[in-house]
Length: 231
Image 1 (cartoon, rainbow, N blue to C red):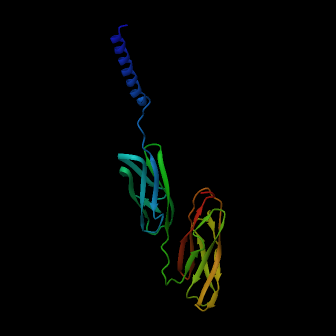
Image 2: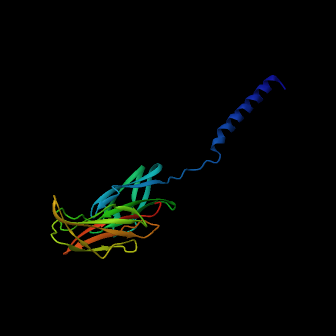
């Protein structure tokens, strides 16, 4: 073969090799599917009638994506839906229904398969500072199967007083039907004070009963969050 022909052949082979190298990265290329990364609500609990801000985060940038939000119990809390996200995140409003108390699971969905959830709690309206009955919990959150403790304070009591107790979800937590609250005399004054047990059952889901203490027509309510074991 003439030297000029050999040089021409080698040049064609080099060009073919370069073209093949450029084409390899494109083989098997597919479009990336954007999915939900997380859903958060801040604050995670509000007083009945108040609202919080939720944030939905995607795992990649998008020009426009529609996310649908739902509440597991709209009688306790509602959410704005749907929302349109441009970028990597968008916000929504979670609002506690006035007069209600409890916990809900807020679910964000995008497309047919991508979803994320967040917990949201709505607390009862607290007793005013001058209330004749005040109810508190030693711990507002416990693990299912454990025993919690409620504490009653009667700031104006001068004699032993009977206080009625109830749970909005006896299947999750039970309390005594009533308790005798004795009077104590200290340097702080005279008042009634007593504690009572809250017995919970084992559950695989979050339960949020409202515990109520009532005396002479005056009530105080608190929310107890009972988490499943390991969750």
